[in-house]
Length: 165
Image 1 (cartoon, rainbow, N blue to C red):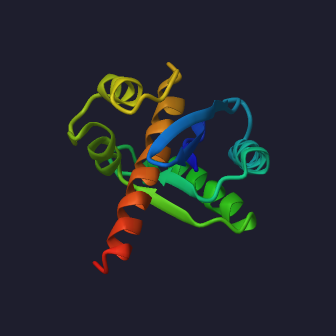
Image 2 (tube, helix red, strand yellow; image 1 turned 120 degrees about the vertical axis):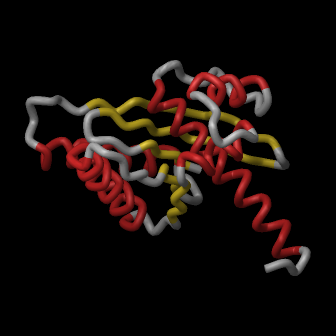
């Protein structure tokens, strides 16, 4: 699973492997794009980083943190564009994509939708035994998004086996 916390200036990427109910953090990266580079160039760098991560780690799917609109629409548009290049890279690789709202990620990882970033990071290490989780917030968020998808995929598969829709 490749988890992505998209952003134009800083994005987090993380590969999490789930086998037999156990998840393992295999890789993480913080992608930083230069502020003095035009937006299209920054998006190209992000796209290349995601394509490279897909080629190297060969995930079965890509999980992306869904953009939540706030007051800063300029920033939201930049994150939306960053999300778009992540979706493009996944599509080019033929991978399915799932998007998760920050609340869904926090609930899956900590059990609380109002968890702080530090609580999410702590839960990843202590509760889910992933580690070491990167200190950089975007990369840690990418780990949480990937784990959220692993947990959700396990639940969906169990529901399908039980005939629940």
